Length: 204
Figure 1 (cartoon, rainbow, N blue to C red):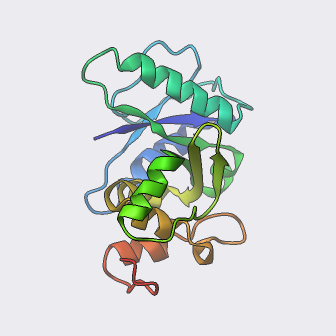
Figure 2 (cartoon, rainbow, N blue to C red):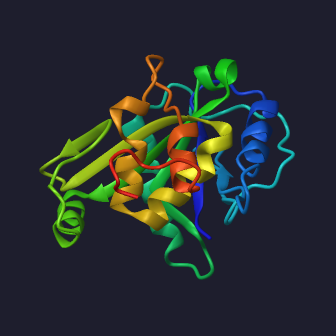
């Protein structure tokens, strides 16, 4: 299973990190997919994940931008490709920020090449569009999506996008499931994926 690099852009109580790593495993068959990076100079990354309990630490990523974190993840995972038996990826990162402390949510970032996304939709005979909160860079042929989700739904989001591809990504990116507070109301797509709710758009 792949591991996702986890960053803290605000000083984070270890209890919040531990809660993420335990709450994300609550759904059936879910597991902890997060590898905590405490500092940019951290020599060794936990592969594929960090085992709680995590002890208190000083984050070295306070104030880092999304771009900074994505570039860091790309560089570190590129370096790791020279080694065997590593499972950490650059296509996903996770971020705990000040809102995470207060609200118990995590921001999940996902990357795809724009051309690959378009090819996937064309192969599925779907309209070519880019759903949800996405940052598109035509020059770099890139799309980055972001979702702020409750801790308990972090694995579910990741697993649905990885396994259901465009359909899972579209489902969790629907504007009708995005709350006014910017948090995805994941209980709805979670239940659709689980078969407990009928998908009103009949995509799944």
